[in-house]
Every structure is written in structure tokens, then in C-alpha cells.
Amino acid sequence: MTHRVDDVPMRSAGSTSAGPPLSHSEPWWRSAVFYQVYPKSFADGNGDGLGDLIGLRDRLDYLQQLGVDALWLSPFYTSPGADGGYDVANPTDVDPIFGTIADFDALVAAAHAREIRVTIDLVPNHFSHQHPWFQEALAAEPGSRERARFIFRDGQGPRGDLPPNNWPSVFGGPAWTRVPDGQWYLHLFAAEQPDLDWSNPEVAAEFERILRFWLDRGTDGFRVDVAHGMAKATGLPDIAASTLAKINDADHMRPSDDPRWDQDEVHEYLRAFRRVLDSYPGDRMAVGEVWASGGHRLARYVRPDELHLAFSFQLVQVDWSANEFRAAIDDAMQTMPAVGAPCAWVLSNHDIDRHVSRFGGGTVGTARGRAAALLQLALPGAVYLYNGDELGIGKVHIPQEAMQDPWEKNEPGLGLSRDPSRTPFQWDATANAGFSRAQPWLPLDPSYKTCNVAALRPDPLSILNLYRRLLSVRRQYAALNSGSFQLIGAQGSALIYERRAGNERIVVCLNFGDTEQPIGPQDFAGSTILASTHPERTALDSNPVLRPNEGLTILMAP
Image (tube, rainbow, N blue to C red; front, side):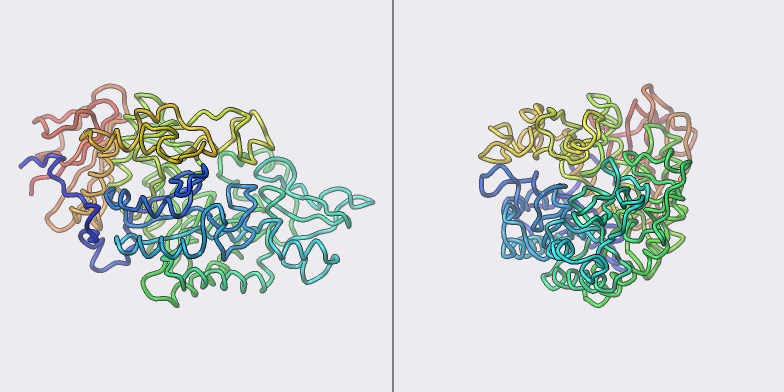
């Protein structure tokens, strides 16, 4: 029997049922589909040009129809906004531009009513320079308790007017800023983001308070920002010249001997997070943003007593190639399950160029993006989608004068700004794309007049409906939810793997080439559940051939 894509059931906005449980035996997060919302750019509820929690709550039916299991909200805390809210001045309150604590509580209740879980960002590496702790540190003397919460050091040179070491900031320039009394403080990111000293017990105690504050409000989990950066090498040694020459923070990956990142001491800090999470009911969880030098280092963050998940960034780092994707998937699948953890697959987020653009942009990038979505949502483990993936949005051109990102401001003209991946969500073709009644905080992609929810929703072959069907198929078939995984291999320009659960066997095939690719002589007697191409396939030929940049999900005959 051929399964047409239109036959796949979808969740309706009027229902509070989230469909079949993800698994009867495993915690919800192990195979959940998370949807990242960048709050400032998702939906404006009060008409000031900035997205907010009210706007997000009003759009929850859309997310329920899409079929996601959980939200990840980027920071909405009180912040001066030097780095998109990741410079947190009060981590237990909502910034007025996003609403109030009452708005957050209402959002959680509304999401839970739709059986959508809510996870939020935790930013433990640094605070804002406007946080009361740092203001107290500036007012205190060197060697004081207040300064011991951060990383203050005397400078080098006869007058201490040289930084304490040669560490660079991710955002350009030195990672040190001097204060009026002559000492320097460390900031691995912007100067407005002073790093905390996690060897100080006060810091750990404060973050236990922060965790419990949000857990007590019903939060289901956390995304731990810069989880690999909380501990620095003992003594803050200089980076070796040979290592310094290899550092390119724009690529995110760090050399293994970079003393700023991935120090062994970080694991005890993360174990403290885990103990707090385990003290609450409901499988509360945490996923780490970890950029490690290899899969074996990444796996250390998800050992049984540490984080539950760590982003599998392997698919972000590869070109559009069957062999590169195979190696990336194999690396993740060899390392994470070895410590009992699932992978957490990522194609795009607020810090990364959108994958449609990375894979070529235009018509080709869109076709490849559709195929990549099919692959991502058929892999074992958790999946993280970024708002706008389901619309096929690419990297948006932002005029230099409209840039907000501190990375761009510190190193202008190098193309490092993350703003092109943070533009307002495209709801319809009306003024401001239905995002706001006011001028949005970042320019819109000119494509919004045709690439928007209202235009894509009625088209059965649109990328939006492809995502909806991919999510529904993932729930419908146990093999795609919690089944086994076997990478069959790369055959020419094709990548093939299979998922099994009981008598159910599903084969997933992707063609990374620009010409047709036969996928025989394997026995592919079955029917196509879903194809990434336009128009969608509904059946296989006796000698299956993949079209250029096409992905197929095939239900095999028993």
C-alpha cells in the first residue's frame, strides 16, 4: 500500500492531545522535537516592534499544529541587551520588553495545556556588567569578596597596564578590560559580559537558586549556554603561539589545548545542575551548548550524572556531501550512545547561518534544506528546530547601519554578524510580515511577501507542510521514534540508513548530488511515506532512483 503524504494525521489546534507518547519506557526528552524561539523576533503582542511573551503565547496554536514537543526560549531576562539578552542583569525576572513574570507563568500554563513543554536558556558563564554583583565588585577593592565572584587579576608590565594573559575575546580584541583602580576583569565575550568564577562556592549557590526559581514555576528544562566555558585552566596560562594561530572563534570549534574551554573542572559544576534537576518530578532536563574538540570530549558532558543532552553540532560543520554527512552522523552515533545519551541534532540556531543558505541558497539551497530536514527528523535522538526553519528562510541581508550584534560592531565588515539569522518571523504578507504593528527591530527578508505562514499553509507541497508531515510521521512510526539505527552507507552521492522497531523497517535515502542517483541493488520493496521533493513522490519504481538533492523515507515491506 502506498501512503500518500496527505494521509498522515496531524495535530489540530483545537485539541489538547499531543498524539501518541514519544515512548512508553523512556524520558520524554530522549526523542523530543524542540522548537527554538528567539523571543525578540517571533511575535509581537503589544505592537512595539519587538517580539514578546504575549505574542508567543498567542501563537502557540501554530506550534501545536506544527507538531513540536517542546519549546526552547532564548533569554527573556532583564538585560541591557548588549548581546541579544545573553548579558543577564537579573536572571530571575522578565525584561519589560518581553513582559512580566505573570506573562511567563501564563505562557507555561498555555503551553502545558497543549502538551508542549517549556525549556529556557541558562547563562552560567557570565553576567551582565549591570548585574548587582558586578556593580558591587567595581565598587569594592581588589581581593574583596565581591571581586572573587568574577575573574579579576592584576595586569602585567611595570605599571600593570598590560592584560593578565594573551586570551582573545570571541567577539574580537582582548578578553580583558581594565577598571579604574588598575585591575582587569575577564570576559570571553563582550566587555559587558564579565565571566563568573565558578571555583567560588557563592556562584554555584546562586545558580542553584536560579534553577529552582524557574523549576518552581513549572519550567521543564534548560539549555545551558557556553557549558564548555564555565571552568578556565588553572592559573589562566597564556595560549601557546601555535594554538593562538589556529583559533578561529567564528568556526566555533576550539583547539583541544585552548585553555579557555572544556576544562575538566566544568563537569563537577554540571553535576550540581543535575542534582537540582533530579530533585524535581517530571523528567526535568538540561541540554548543553558544548563546542568540544571531538565527539569523545563532547560525550563526557552527557554521562549519566551530568547533562541529559548536548547539541550534536556535527551537521552544522559539514558541507553538502554524502561522505561528510556520513562521517558526521557516524561520529555522533559512535560517541553519544556509548555513554547512554541520545544525540540532539541541530541544523540551525540563532548563532549559526541558516542551513538553507549554508547549503547553497536559492532554489538549490531550498531543495537541500528540505532533504536535510527529512534526514534530521528521521535520525535517532532529540531534534532541535529553529524558528523559521519550517519556512525555508535563509540568511537575510542586513544593512551595516542596522546591525545589532556586538560581534559585528567589534569586527565590522568580516561577515561575522549573527543578525542575518535573527530576523523577524514571517507570518503573512501584510505590513511588517504580520510580526508587529510597528517597525520591526531588524529589517525583514524581502521574501516575506511570498514566504510566510499564511501563504505556505494552504499549499500541500510547501516546506511548511513538509515539516508538519515529517513531525507527524516521526510520531506515527515507532521505527522513527525509538527504533534502532543502522547506517547502510554512502553509495555514490547517496546516503542510506535504516530504522527498525519490531516488524517495522524504514529506510531513509538522501541524494547529495545534482544528478539522479540509483539506490539499488538493495531490496527496496516498499512504499514511500514521504519525499522531500516538489512534487512529492507517492510510489517507488522497481529500480529506485533518487532525484537531485532529494530525500526519501521508505516503509519497507515486511
